[in-house]
Length: 104
Image (cartoon, rainbow, N blue to C red; front, side, top):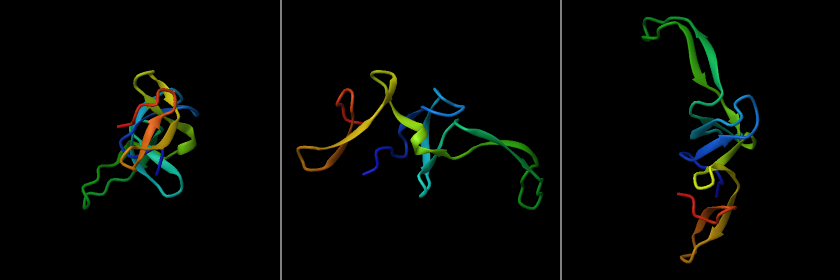
């Protein structure tokens, strides 16, 4: 079971965007992910009228390593670690390490 999943609210703990918050939008198999509004880069594109692409300088998200983000705990309003525990039904459940509450 992954400790951080798609749709989780995360906070950046290292890098130029340190302290910013966002939501995980997708993962790559090499241990990196896209986070909405984090690590924005400029991309210069040529116009392509056949494909309907307008040229210019576009801003898009870049990959960020999983070691540079941590899950955001809304009750403490800080970064937190994740533990995986077994529930009463026998399924694995992700919980916040500081409070012990289940991650939804």
